[in-house]
Amino acid sequence: MTIDVRSPRQETAGGSDDDVLLPVEPRVREIARELYGHARDLPLISPHGHIDPGILADDEPFGDPARLFVVPDHYVTRMLLSQGISPDALGVPRVDGGPVQSDPRVIWRTLASHWHLFRGTPSKLWLERTFTGVFDVHTPLRPETADEIYDALSARLAEPEFRPRALFARFNLEVLATTESALDPLTRHAKLAADGWGGPGGRVITTFRPDDMVDLEWAGWPDRVRALGAMTGCDTDTLSGFLDALRLRRLDFIAAGATSSDHGHPTARAASVDDAASIFTRGLRGEAVTAAEAEAFRGHMLVEFARMSTEDGLVMQLHPGAVRNHNTWLHSTHGRDVGGDIPEATEYTRALRPLLDEFGHDPRFRMVVYTLDEQNFSRELAPLAGGYPSVFVGAPWWFLDAPEALRRWREAVTETAGFYNTAGFVDDTRAYCSIPVRHDVARRIDAGFLARLVAEHRLSLDEAGETIADLAYHLPKKIFKVG
Image 1 (cartoon, one colour):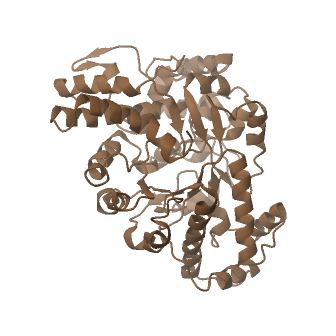
Image 2 (cartoon, helix red, strand yellow):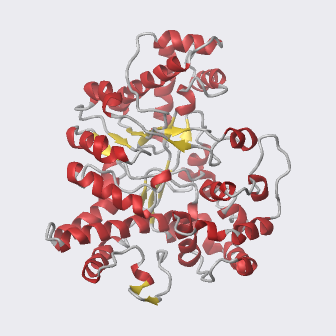
Image 3 (spheres, helix red, strand yellow):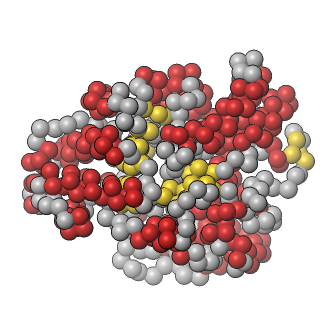
């Protein structure tokens, strides 16, 4: 049995809650309903996400609702911070270990009293449909209902059916990819494999994420490079030894189920540089390295990672364009990955050309490229995917993973890249319980987009039905090699 992410049928002026996100025009909505039916119950493929694998390895009951839905969700805490509510009041840990709100019910009441701030946002959509579809809690969240909902969710979380592994089956998850750094010992994935979670019908796999190994501006970089050497037995005092160590770690990840690597650099620059070894050595010694040299080294390493992908077969994912830790105060008080990053304009055509000149037509190479710069979908990424057999356009993610952006994405890329040079939906989430809701949203948006093409006599209904099944299930399995 799978989770029904729909709310109970509630008639509205234009139809029912079953029609959420489907087109308003009656004829197109009717077609969309039929197309959505082709995708709704297909298994979920989640090839790019950030769920803690320990959740499934340990299979302990989730904690209280506040620590499940508020504290770790930077979509939520970011919005509240924008209205002057400190992360301290939401229980977000401080870098200095200082005191923060520890009463989960108080944190939950804070969310409820400011719930109006989320009107129209994907966070509201995801959370409400998670409450109704996953936990069968249908009372609208308001200040006066905060305790009632908190108690109802707490009661559900105490039931065996709501433990992580039970939910994995109910979510109809076929493949879930987590993301680990190059220094991760992968013990949690080893436990999952030992427990039988490495075969068909329910796999949790890892993804190789080496950003902290190639960013000389990231504090502690020399220590991590030496730790990589100790872990692999390679001499990482030299660039060649460092590359050997990364190759060995990639093999460890492949043995743990990895089919892709993930690279979140500031820019898409990917070009070999002659003095890479000198930059590496000076950085390792603690000598001054300029920002331009650090950027050049990151670009050099993207080319090296592409080369490694031709050797070991890992699909290369690239998602540049975030100014990390832009909110200096938030970073200094609460650390990384708590909502302090901002998108910026990103150039791909010239940045990726050296890499594509070398590997763009190599049948062993495959790259999925994401962006936070919407203008690039039609201007650069769709033409690149339409011009190189190795390149696929990644789905909107992070700041763009909203229904409106998903619609705009299809409109922007389809005319140049078609459907089959896109890589399927990725939920990119740390919020485990929202996974089925996020996939359901994407399937509904695709149903609406395809329904319009059918209504305009640009696709037959049969073609559209086949396409939505491919977008939801078959394409991500193929492109991310998880079939």
